[in-house]
Image (cartoon, rainbow, N blue to C red; front, side):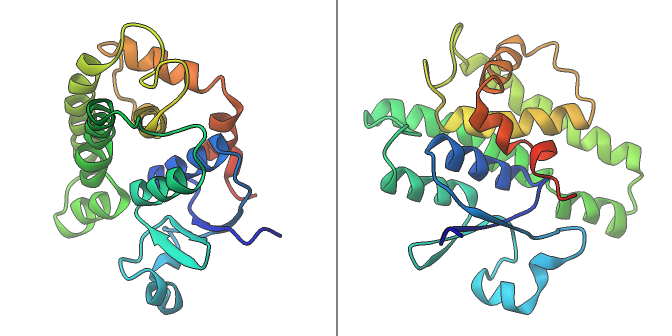
Length: 210
């Protein structure tokens, strides 16, 4: 049994990002299912280690790491290949900007706790919540499509952080029946990434508990 433990929820896109990064870097880990629907992330023992009570949390090298982009940054520092961001300052900044369109702008307003609040506290209908979800994906994807390369991945010949963030968000977009016809470059990149085993092994349907 590996010493690296990922507290994970199969449908969490933030967890999905970390699974992809671990797989790309060939880092073996043990997954501990932490069900957001069952409230496992709010268990006092878990919150003592992860005060936000979110997933993912990666236990590695004696540390409890939280927040997916921070976890991937740590992995990038410890396991150099393949790099998630360039060492060139401008290329690094460009990749971070692309990744954060998803991780800082689309995902935070569309995650499970926000959707539950819209339904349970603000009384929004399921149809209204779905419209909300698709709106923020479409707005973010419009910008990302304009930034996407005409050929290849965001990372060129190999995936980078932007690709790692894109694939889970594309899965969410399809789950909520978002019209992706305006985003042909993103659809192409997503398809190319999903030809790689590291992405396929990280997909929700591949890790969903039996």
